[in-house]
Amino acid sequence: MDGVGTHPRLALDGDIAQGPADAALAMPLAARAEPLAAPPALQEPQTELIEPGKALVLTDFQPPAISAGERLIRLAYRMGVSGPTLTAPFRKPAGPRLLATVESPLTGDRVAGVALRAGHFLIHGVKAPIAQMDFGPNARLTPPFERTVHGFEWLRDLAASAPREQCGPTAERVLALWLDANPKPGKGAAWNVGHAGHRLFNWLVHAPLILSGSDRALRARALAAASETARWLDRNVSKAEDGIAETAGWCAIVAAGLLLPDGKPRRLYGEAGLIKALGELVGDDGGVLSRSPLAQMEAIGLLVDLCAAYRATRMDPPDALLGMLNLLVPPLLALTHGDGSLGSWQGAGAVGADALSALVEASGVRTRPLRHARQWGYQRIAAGKAVLQLDAAPPPLARHTRSGCASTLAFEFSDRGQRIVVNCGGAAFAGGQVPVRIEGGLRASAAHSTLVLDDVNSTAVLINGKLGTGVNEVELDRRTLLLETARGEKGASATRLEASHDGYSQRYGLIHRRILILRDDGSELRGEDLLVPTGRKGKRGKVPFAIRFHIGPGVELGLAETGLGAGLALADGSYWQFVAAGAEDCQLLVEESLWVDGVGRPHPIQQLVLQGMVSRGGGNFSWLLKRMG
Image 1 (cartoon, rainbow, N blue to C red):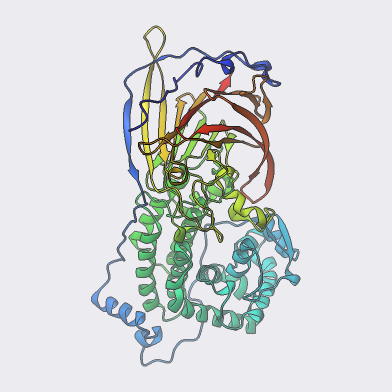
Image 2: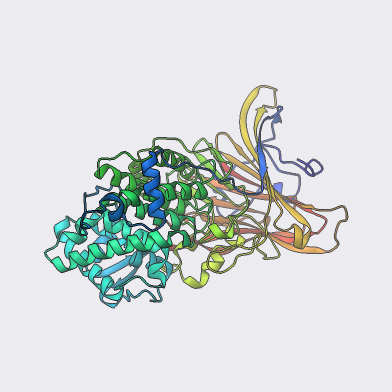
């Protein structure tokens, strides 16, 4: 790649460079430390070049093949002709009723369901009494509460907590309160397309909870509200706030077409709209264009329940939906660490292995993680029991994001299920235990394990989860390095990732280039962060920089006396050594940080910060993370 050959390179093993940082490290935790080995020779690398990309590529899906008569029905319904008129023009329209009972393979949070039966919503660790909840369409609720209350996400949790006979009264109570506060479609959060779509879909999938009680009046109100919401979505689904919200709206329309009377025209209309929406939501390799693991999980969950609705009516789902499910799962698995939990990317917390495995099992897809999701933009290296994840793509476009993060070239690293280097994550959970006031900070570059210039985000972080200008292009090169021992014998191998972004080029005239080399046994991760000037004329002056390594929970951290090293003692008893070199007038500090787990609980952690001043003519900073013993 241009501009790289003139800069120093890291050897795969051994000391980074001669200097004070290479001396024996006297660390508070260094009782088990061992000297670093000498560098081996490198053979000609086996190259796997990943094409540079400026934007994500959309996937085009075709609606299922239908007859000429069905195409005419779909066209007429889209133009406003009602379903009963098209299906039985000379018959009195059928009253609202449910045609089948859906058995969803997805499971909810039993703890949250038990809290509901005790009279409280439990959302990301925050309890809110049902009796004090404002269910109105314009209520000022935080985003997690809006999704749960107006989207009726709590129905799945309630169903997981006890038999239907015990859960029904609670479901009916909350439903009645919501219907009283929302007698007809209106404006506000309750009538966002995403919330309305999830609400109708959950009503239909979990209908036994809300329709099996003895209150016939409530049952009639619920069925009437479902029919009215379906008609509202028919008219407004194209006005969705983002792609995943539109997908939820279309899924609800298709489900209503399957499960409500005279629904064939609505189903045909919904299938065409859904498949078009999925084509605009998902990239060629199966990653959603928001690049969010939470959105990826939401899309999978919607399709799983929709396929269950088809089965309930003894119909086969369109092949395009089944193909999309098979496409969505492998990229999600690419963001798993050794313990099966997710990395913290684009606002997501570290979703636990149990929740993820339950979703994948419900999908019925049996596959392996993608090694490099080129369009979704995440690179994954599994070496021994270690896993490295790298964000190697431009950030998502503003129209796709909900909790967009300036995380380009950030990485996460784990070994034997223990997270060693992490990102803070959790911006999408703000409004629960994570305070709303720090949501913007969790989306910033400094909340990720990457280089930051002058405390400026590589991509502008805007309000309402959106992103502005910044990184436009990311270049990526992935290679396999074959090693030789000092005697010339064949030895181990390693994987080398080299990526760069232009997020700081316009303001500072510098390109950030990051090189990561992970041995195939997972025992050593070498990195080099380079700042390469753009243009022919170098700029004068210096600019402050900071390379941040957020250290995972449960890791005990201690600085070396040299000032450019640290020891990391992991909970499993293993010990890792961090060394920085080649950085003049720099210092390594330990600072406080924050890490958000998969259920939205913030945990205090620490971070290593290599900081100093760098010339606008460029610079390079090398570091090593090595397992000792």
